Amino acid sequence: MALSSEHGYSDHEQKRVVSPAIVHEEYQYLHLVQRVLERGEERNDRTGTGTMAVFSPEPTEWTLANGTLPLLTTKAVPFQAVANELLFFISGRVDTQWLKDHKVSIWDANTSRQSLDAQGKTHIPTGHIGKGYGFQWRHFGGEYGKVSSDGKPDDILKSGVDQLAKVIEDIKLRPHSRRHIVTAWNPAQEQDMALPPCHLMFQFYVHNDETLSCAMTQRSCDLMLGVPFNIASYSLLTHMVAHVTGLKARTFHHHMMDTHIYNDHREGAKVQLDRTPYPFPSIEFKRPVSNIDEFTLEDFQLTGYQHHPKIVMKMSV
Image (cartoon, rainbow, N blue to C red; front, side, top):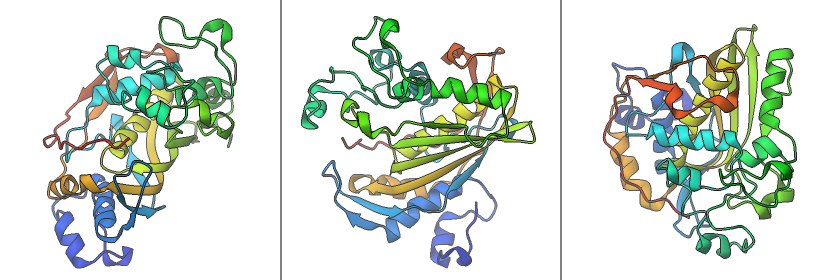
């Protein structure tokens, strides 16, 4: 998505990033990467790695029509890991063993004994995300005393508000409501979370009783590792919610706050900026699904994902 000088970008910036032959939504992301590298404020951070950061850049908007899935193409983004983490959140599970069983290791460091103890969260078992993300989506403000063998909070001890189920029901019954909101930000239970949620709130909007859009607000945005995951995850979630409510996915809007590039990601970012995006892939569902809890990885058919090679970057914890 080409930017002109009226947006505050120099001719050098445009020439370096924008391909004159292609107008592609991925350039929103690439321009933001370049903006952080060239204009970001140097900041210390919780992990000790150090970052370059900007605050509250212009939101990005991603087209989801016709099954489009904005899975970034200027580097490989692992779709199965994105999808399995989303299914993990939707399930309300708190034990990351399910993720490990599905070959997803992205939560291992943050749920290690060392990480939990360093935060003073000695009461959270090793390998548990605690009352974060999916727990708040499905049991906001609730309590659990133990975890069953499938990694979910014990049925008898479940409580709280099932925000996701309520939103889906409201989309069906009251599509024009302004309350289609799910929040994971719960200060009262932050000490019970392995990691306070970075993507903390999302809201749905129904257009003309036909199409569905989603906007997500993210307080902390790891631009090189986390954000590509987040874009794909919430776009996929929008497709899924649209599917179970009889709508078509339309757009995903991403509102980023502290938007940063870790110092040890700078060289990888420069490599990515020199690449030209490919067309985005499409997502289809192999069978009709009426309940958000019934989706499995096998239901997703990703088609046409062409991408540049993986760029190895270390996650800061």
